[in-house]
Length: 312
Image (cartoon, rainbow, N blue to C red; front, side):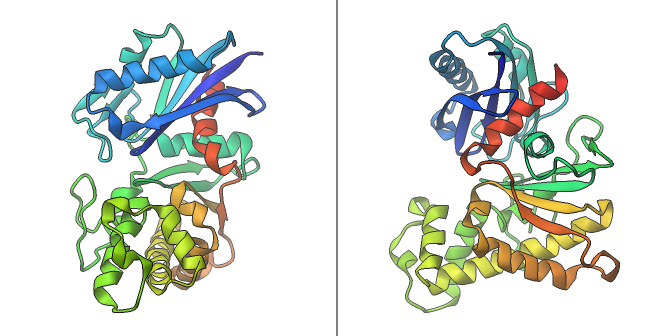
């Protein structure tokens, strides 16, 4: 069976899978991105991981989704990765593996994946928002992915929301959206809420570095006041921002994916409420907010794999 490899380079986890044309993931593996301080050793780990999961399957190419990916095959000054400068990912990996390698922004890959396999199959105008370590965005207008001059269009995670607190993103943007709306952002919000309110909470005994998104969702389900307030705060900011984004491309749908989106109603309900409140009148009831149609744990792999099927 002819297949492709999809690689999602996340700020926390790198996921690799062998994917068929029908979106079946035949083999997969993952490892912690942050364990590799040196870019060269990180590439070696990607290569060995591919070798370990490929048992004589014919591979047509490799698709990679990564933050700050350019059309030139490089990752440039990534905000949530260990490495700095311009990293020639495609050229470096090709020295290890003699296959076509395609690279794009991780959120662009998510958008392509939704078009091929998910809830955007019949849509020509939509936005995908990836809520991972940071916030990424992929915009499709009139059936075409908006990439920009060299691939850096739609960096909405660094769109300033002009919040009075002035949190900085990984690129130093004051009040940048991803500093509030991301897996990292909601952890920061938990700490903010602990300082703002005196209510009992499970998080009063948990250090920031020991806090995980799943903990916040579980706490909200157990009626933890701080967790619920954190989701309400996050959803309010996300909803208002999405309403602003509608004005420049008028999508039919906005699709949420990534770790923070896995919290389901806890992020979705306050987001939709804020979105509808801030949406201009002539957009009302025309734009849906949806959770990704791809299987939660594998959506990033499928999106990266779709990049190969789109180009070969």
